[in-house]
Amino acid sequence: MTELPLVERLRLDKWLWATRLCKTRSLAAEEIVRGRVRVGGQPVKPAREVKAGDRVELRQQGFWRELVVQACSPVRGPAPLAQALYAETPQSVQARQQDEQARRLAAEPARAIEQGRPTKRDRRAIDSARGGWRRWSASIDDE
Image (cartoon, one colour):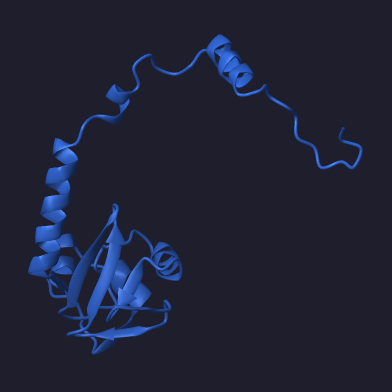
């Protein structure tokens, strides 16, 4: 495999894209703007530059991953080389494994529904038991 070109500093959205943590740079920027990415525990903007040694927290699949920046490359390379650009902290790995274990052992949500989705007849019965369904309108002459 060839080596990736390295730089000292790189925009956060480019770094997330180059490390293959986000599929596109625009999706990386969107995740940052939505507050799902933090650097040093602080919310940041997509143009924030990261360098080796920075701690990046990234929310993926419902839990936070804590990564340490090892290097910065402006080029998106193959996955093994991209994974060498960061290291996940041991606490983050342990928390992710515990979360996966809890999800594996959790009850199937669909089994909690005894009779399945209500039919049209059942829905009408539920609505009438609640006092009936009334159409809502913003007009002044409503009742």
